[in-house]
Image (cartoon, rainbow, N blue to C red; front, side, top):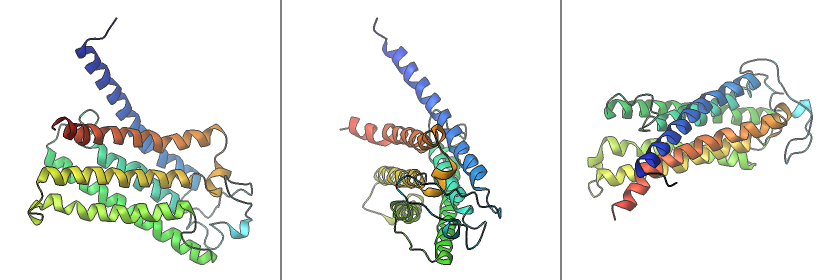
Length: 249
């Protein structure tokens, strides 16, 4: 029996609501789990001596926490806060189904988006500074892994994206561009930045620190977290801008 258009629309909306709710839970749950694992500020260094995915053995003397215990532990938490919680919530604010501020005006939602994005950038910059200084203390190379390079690119891209968002506040600065076109480019380029951040998180979960702390099914479950939020954000941006623009031609 074929479903009516109205039934399909309701079913699709219900699925989007469920997916959005899952994204909210995952966005918060992931950094909470990372905080439990990393124990930020603690002098304890939860570091195994096993073999990580794609990495060799490493002794306690060359672990990320060896030179200054407690310093490295802030890096995974700050990055998880930036790219999992703050940035996800900054984008979900514009979700028509699951935005926590959907009853407020668009002006308020835009301001909240700006605040969350700036907080995400601040956390990412602090996380980058901490891991850079920690590597300096340990005498290790900077940005020599895919995780490090992707993380650096994600942080720099986020900074550029925040700077580009100023054009939406002052569209008269771009006289040859319509506001609709600026919104489209900001949303699509922001999606690229979000996916870079998610990729950095996933590569970080392949590091020796994470794979010796989280093993088995828990590791695969953790890897699903950035995937879930990325799919939800991709669907939101596509429906709001890309599909709508295509239907107008």
